Image (cartoon, chains in turn cyan, orange, green, blue):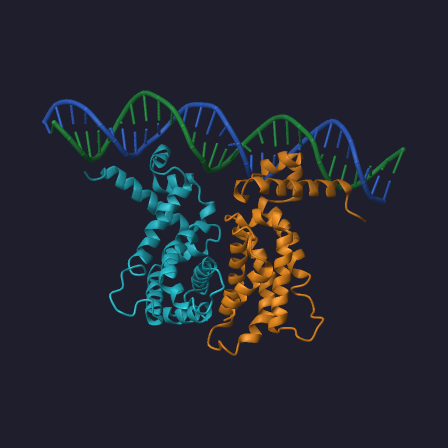
Length: 187
Length: 187
DNA sequence: AAATTACAGAACATTATGTTCAATAAAATA
DNA sequence: TATTTTATTGAACATAATGTTCTGTAATTT
């Protein structure tokens, strides 16, 4: 059985209202009252869909980042140079292109310093990629540095790179940004 | 003329109340009402001292990080190997020792993901240090990487290193952490 | 001793949160 | 189509925080 058409409508009304509000104010400044007014739904209806404002954010984030990362970054390699420098670079450039396409929605989200939750969701899928494909390729150099530190370091480096890129207004190309990142983060 | 003794008392009462509350809950969860109750002062008295909760945070942060950074990290070099690898390493280790000494207050603050303001204040003095002493020493390697990206990268790398360190419960020594950081961030 | 200043504490308007409930409208089911 | 199930509405409600304003009181300065 499909989900009730009313549920779908309310759900997307909330989502749209939230994104529209994100264009105007930062996450912390958005109240549930704002969302209710913007979505034009009853108070109790919101609470029938989401427990808190953070639950809503969680839903937004998974939809956003799953789309960007899950598809290709963690996809099974279809070629024989998986894990190589070329492969890693290609995947990072690919990811940056995806982020660039979503620039309109993301630039507002990324500039919102208050919502660390965003970055948690952002880093989660990237961390898997780092552990699987990047770290094994460079353990030779840094044997005595704890592995979890290395993973954490690279994830944060990528996050801050994307932050920097968006803060600059995406002036650089994905290829350039990827180059900067790889040169700084991986020797 | 000295400041009114009553003002001093109220001020420190607010500060102490805030720090005590930070031991219990995260920044976002602390209300002005909590502070008033904990400090045992009148409502209007708080607003006579601080406009908002963020103003109070700002005051706390400057006191905290100015103490840690300003003194030695940005001090005039008293020796002739300023800017060298040994000098940079010594200063970073020194900074980490200071952070370690303040672990009680800082661990609560650092684990509070919500307050990005903390990290802004944390990075501000470090950024000056990076630009003055670290970047000039390695521009040879990375000529075509934008300088502001390099500075941003290294600052964020140090911030995430400290975050990681505290998250692990400061198991590693400052010397070890400094080693990890320098090896990962500066080739 | 007099003037100044800070504080207490209460009152107040405003705003947001989260819950509850009966009526209504829409959808799914038989 | 008729019936049942479910979602939504909208209002009401209790709770709690914000920020302002005011008066009397107490401490401090001059």
